[in-house]
Length: 237
Image 1 (cartoon, rainbow, N blue to C red):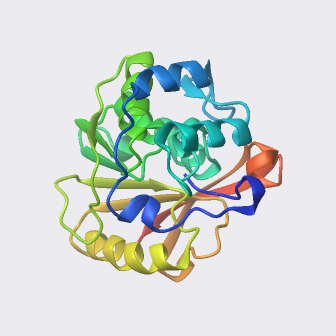
Image 2 (cartoon, helix red, strand yellow; image 1 turned 60 degrees about the vertical axis):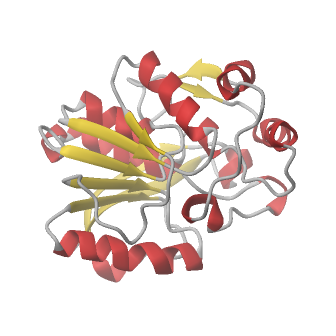
C-alpha cells in the first residue's frame, strides 16, 4: 500500500521486509480510533474502513506515538490505488479466491484480505510488519464482520500455506522489488496464484505479468499527486 508521500519522504524497503519496531506503550487500537473515521474506499464502496482524511497530521502523530524518527507513514490508514483495484477485482471475480486459502501480503488496512473473505475464501490471512497494522486489520475486519488472521513477520522468500497470494502496491522501491519479484515468481511456479494490484509503480516487473483487469481508481491527491490513478491487476506467470 505504497505511493508518493507527504514532504517527499519515501517508504523504505525495511517498512515491509525488516523487523518491526516495538509497539508503543499506549493502546494502538485507541490511537487508531482517535485518528481515523469510518469511511468507504471510493472504488470499493461495499467495504468500510478506519481511514485518515489528512496524511500529514496523522503521519506526525504516529511518529510521536512511537517516539521514533523516520517511522514509516501510516499506510494502514489509507486505501491505496493498487489495493482498491485488487479488492475490486476479487469482489467482481470471486471465483479467484472462493474456497481457497488466501494471503494478503503487505496488507496495510486489510482491505484486500477483507475482500477475499467476502468473496468466499476458505481463510484469509493478512501480513505486514508495521506494528499498527495488526490492530488496524482487527478493527476493519470487525467492522466488516469477517474473520481475518494476521501475521506480523517477514514472509518474503519463504514457503506459504496459502493457495492465493495477493499484493497491492508493493513495487515502489527497487530493493524491495528485487526481493519480492523472484519470490512471487517461485510461488507462481509452485502452483500458487499470485495477483498484484498496481497503479504504475516504478519497479513493477511487467515482463513477468499477465494483465487481468484495469480500473480508474479515485485516490488522495496529497499522497498520489493525482485524483485518479489508472490501476491494473496482474497475475504472475
